[in-house]
Length: 360
Image (tube, helix red, strand yellow):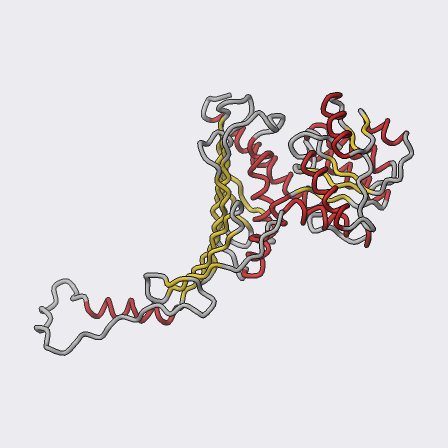
């Protein structure tokens, strides 16, 4: 449903899945209101194409599930038509333009007993899967998601366009209600917020800082988290996870040795050194799985061994499996609603800050 920047990738992956598993997947049709684009993709994939959802449904094709890749402002209307027709749906993020629209779709999906998955793509990034396995007690996150400006997705601001990926990830990792939100943002090249900085405190005591920009000179997709005796650095684009682990006993010994070797102010001078060799400070000894030795004693550096995978393919496989087995997708509608609610709360805080600063 829609063959823009996201929709054409959905088409490609669905066709790849059909070729790999024809007994489970069949790409049936596409919908796009733009004649040239509709005709081009219909020819490329050799499938019927329609200008509207109504035309699609009137064709009485054998349909089970649909990807909705239309602008956010149309998510709710398209989802409603498809759910009422008895179809399962995947909605590209963000879930909807408003919470009222999201709640309407949630209620309708429950009434129709239909599956609604939300396309928070980064949940399927192999580096995120590896991070979940390493999680213990996260207490601080630092997120940066920066993009070069493009005219894509200008119907929403940078919070709903880019930052919402990281909001969803952190919400899933903290598993804690939000306590406080502080935010600032500015429109730079569009009429909506193009750069934003956010600080969120959770009821668990965890704090997260987010920066998102679509007017950057570089592409950055990184998340760092700190938990007791460990620091994890996640690179979404490279699908890499680096972990620095701390051996508290070794670090404490190193600190104690350094303190002992340093004279206190006002104390008598240390005796002259003897010919005996000084006791060396402990050195780091990374585990066999580590890929390198950290220069600081008591710290070991590990690069996770992560099998690479295309997040969109993993996402669509998860959605189709949920459709076949009638089970919950990895990112159900309720999770999409929670990310949307937080993003809209951030936008409220950005607007309040702009008002205080005299920018509105």
